[in-house]
Length: 336
Image (cartoon, rainbow, N blue to C red; front, side, top):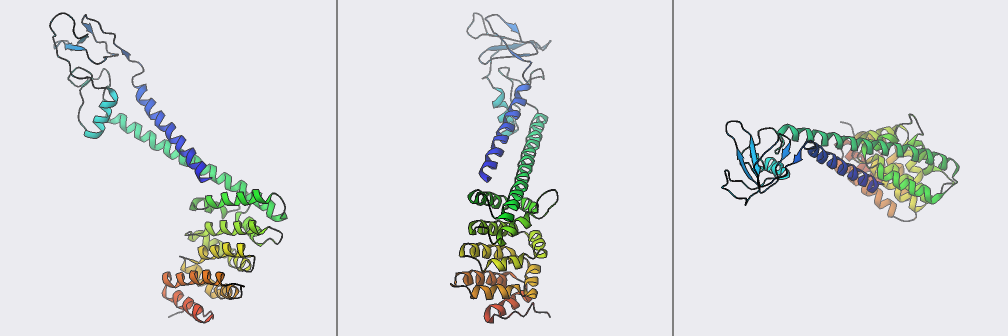
């Protein structure tokens, strides 16, 4: 899903670049290219001069003339190498230098914008920024709409435990990918205007008739929604996600592994959540459940999570968790 969104964004950006380029070309849409001959011809105000011509200018009237090189007669004015519009723009952008207009050897007097003004570049930059913002908004709206649809499908599937299991696993994988973004994870926290995302995932994780692959992927998505997201951690704490994850620790190994991932995402980096888990006894019960498991892989993973809390936590939390790790007894946060 993320790849598809990235491709969509890239295509939109390419379209924006094309629009910017077309804006430049629009500045010349009323101009025509002069058709030179061996005879001197006045250069009209909307004529662009091709390269390689001899040029002259009447200093009294300011009228410029052009003709082909190599024709009979002495040249009244030497030409300079042709400087195209793109070259002029690039030179202006990179050096800030004033670039002479095509062939004339002098700055264009305003009748044909060989060198787009700084205001032109500012307008193009502003338009590109606006288009970039529009692309981001379109991607965000699409992602939020997709999360809402996935949530509704999950709620219906996990309530029955029946349906296309493989499709549901794929849907959960796509949802997990989206939930890496904090603003998208916030969509899972609200039931306004649609299915309750947290309730849908909780039903999948705790559903007795739900296949373990679906339960495991639901725990994975829930963990990703809470990872480094204090707002999600605190909201899900209020909805008793700790008890939900505790029940998953006694499930099949595949579900247990993803539940441990969700526990780590939930408990790390948030001292308020850690204090609550200590006070409620959830950390102690998680540890007891892991120690009762048939193998020690769950215990090792949970001990790693608790060790991280000791390293990152405040003094009161670190002290309590260290004691819990050493003797399995929850004493709650230490108070001075």
